[in-house]
Length: 136
Ligand SMILES: [Fe+2]
Image (cartoon, rainbow, N blue to C red):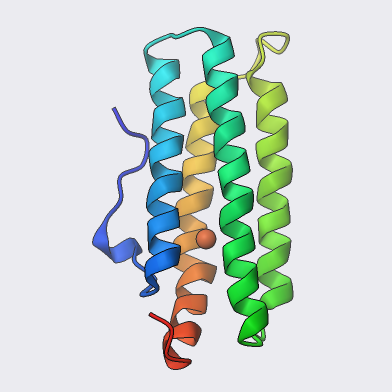
């Protein structure tokens, strides 16, 4: 089962950003799946790590576009990206078995909700701005 499913309404109107969001969603689902299938913890931690690395690549794509086009809300977006990276890093700790108190499903629910909120809020705004600059 997926924890997050791509919908057309998630499109921000810029192809490279949409493609990277689709990839991120796929990676969250893959990691979530490994929890549901009760695969080895090692597998889950690797998948979360891959997702985190990909999120960094994706944030770099967005930040580069913001800088090139002098996006006025660059600082706010970067702050959100940093917050996510901190949260994703602490997810790693939370998910390891030393910390049995945390329900991994809740961690994924948080990550999925964060990503959906981020796409629908700040990234949509960025998309509108980039469209006005002729970037699609
Ligand atoms: Fe994004």
